[in-house]
Length: 117
Image (cartoon, rainbow, N blue to C red; front, side, top):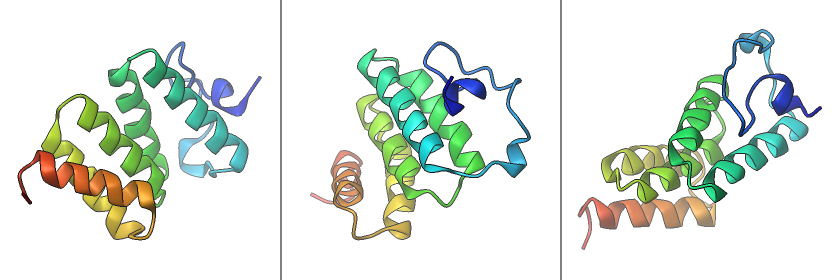
């Protein structure tokens, strides 16, 4: 069973009550891959609310991970919640201004919020 499934963060459900001590979790490569796979599964199923919930929970756990912010920004773009997309893409670009996806999402959120024309 994958690490993501062990802590209740699968596409089948996001009940995190069975999670180990959240405040002691480390972001390992395996966790990151499983988390990314779970997020992508939600996106493939057009379950944007579950993707959002999973991203928000993990931002709370790993606030230093810029890719969580930019992925959440993408989710908000799809949901047409452009102000939220802008907030999270701005945070991501402050954390990693050289990542191409971060730059793209930031530009897209700027356009959608009419902050640039």
